[in-house]
Length: 277
Ligand SMILES: Nc1ncnc2c1ncn2[C@@H]1O[C@H](COP(=O)(O)OP(=O)(O)OP(=O)(O)O)[C@@H](O)[C@H]1O
Ligand SMILES: [Mg+2]
Image 1 (cartoon, rainbow, N blue to C red):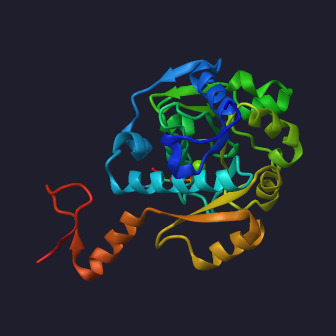
Image 2: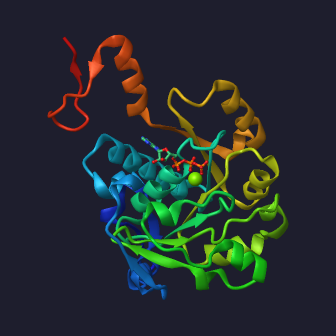
Image 3: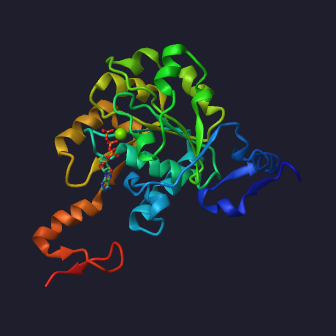
């Protein structure tokens, strides 16, 4: 009876098959038991963390869809550490990373770590309105335990290891990151979302690629040039890319509106479109 294979009612969408012993053990090990300090914030609107600030928006819906697909993939193949990168600076990697971490964590239902590996242009703590603390660069420099730099961010319920002080040296990650670093984190977290630098400089992204299971490539709708996407795809290799996130589709709609007469009504429902007379 105890080792009977169960299909958890609440997790039908992720085709979760497990034994009843494992299932019950999982429930006992609620992630809220993880021994990390907690930061409770009021999420700034500028963070664009729409999963939290506008949960009924089309953008939040799209992030929930991506998290569902990721969970399906995790059920069918090894997928725990996810590299989030983009061909160019400013394509939206950090915004996508924040929203995905929040969507996967579902307010603390799953232990999800947001690892800020963009040690050149860290932005996550600022986006969340948090004061900085020692993070990844300090851990790698001093060979200290990364677990000591992790905090939980509520109400989203994900955990964050920030980049720490920005580094000026080139190829910092290539010379300091090790498989053991990720293996240690993977024993605690079900998902590790790695907010990374763009695909140039190449050495850094290749160092991250070999230590992660797959890549989500972020491109800005109507913004990232096709050649830059092709170069990024070649750098990462098609087999490592499990998907492309088209960011700022609404921005693209605004561009189209100039030509086709679509516009946002000033006082209408959010996200609705109307035809300009
Ligand atoms: N969908 C969106 N709609 C409107 N603005 C957006 C969207 N996504 C990101 N932005 C804005 O674009 C800017 C860059 O976004 P973000 O910091 O996420 O990009 P990034 O790729 O992480 O940048 P960097 O390469 O500097 O790390 C930010 O000001 C962010 O608020
Ligand atoms: Mg960023």
